[in-house]
Length: 425
Ligand code: GUN
Ligand code: FE
Image 1 (cartoon, rainbow, N blue to C red):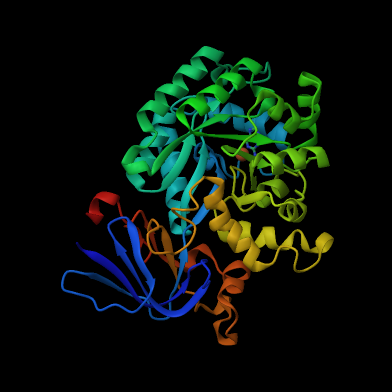
Image 2: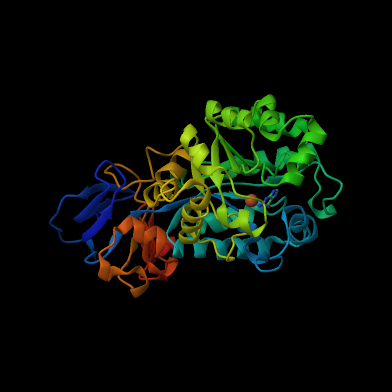
């Protein structure tokens, strides 16, 4: 079988070795065959010279909206509820099949070019099939789903939907896409947030997610106005309500989780809910600063995501890592969220958030070959000082330092040239 060998590279494996200074990484079909031992290439092997390069596990972004990629820069100075009501919802309502497809392609291209190999994505009410098509063609690993919103008089007509239609369309998409391409694509139900979903919808989502054994991905406790509406509508705090509905569990990913009380944090911990920290979006939409160091201390699993409102309007994991490392320092001290911890959130903890820690998130024999090859020798990475590579990645590197991205053993970008997955085979 044809192998791809990345020779003589620095490998940041994130297993017990963490970093191997000079090693080879061998890919066979969709999996890593070995990471570290030196191997002799045989005729027919594809050899990538890794000299002076750093190989890392591909980043896992645990909260993304591909359908919002085209809206960047259109509403940069609004808080969440105004941003949604005045700009994002009308723009989502105006999407057609072609614009969703292009929005998804643009977002995926940017993700791959920045070394992100897996995303947890939330689409809009209509045309989610086109986003799945873009995901399928691009080769990115994704959990994605149609947004569900069957409640709310302030929602534009084009986004209002009936409970039964929302459920039926979601299940149709699930049946078509869940497990596609050998499991690279998975369906995740995406009720938008509690205030746009009826209790009937949420309980049906709970039962269907159990039935199909798929994830649920939603926003929670992002903004003070939002949690006030949840309390008004349900008489409960956001996370307590989700627990009451029976949605809280190991297959739930909650984006943001900024405004939590201790009881809610305890529910998240106890139930094994995964939290997607989105520092750029939380700053941009003036939502607040999540208690990430405290959640980490409690043992809550945390991933990172750029969301649909990343602070610099790019789906850039380097930016999110840097912000996540920096914003907690004044309150919690310089080491509370140190570079290693942040890099783990971007990789292996993200893998846990999607239930794939046995498959992705580190460079280990037997795992899926989802990785990025970086050149950390540019002047802005300060290579002359010989700094620790993880520190360099978190504090100095940029998306443009990613040279090659491989997902499921397929080269989807090589030397910054994008490749369609068909070209690879
Ligand atoms: N809450 C409900 N919908 C959204 C959305 O599209 N983006 C963000 N950041 N928060 C939300
Ligand atoms: Fe979001």
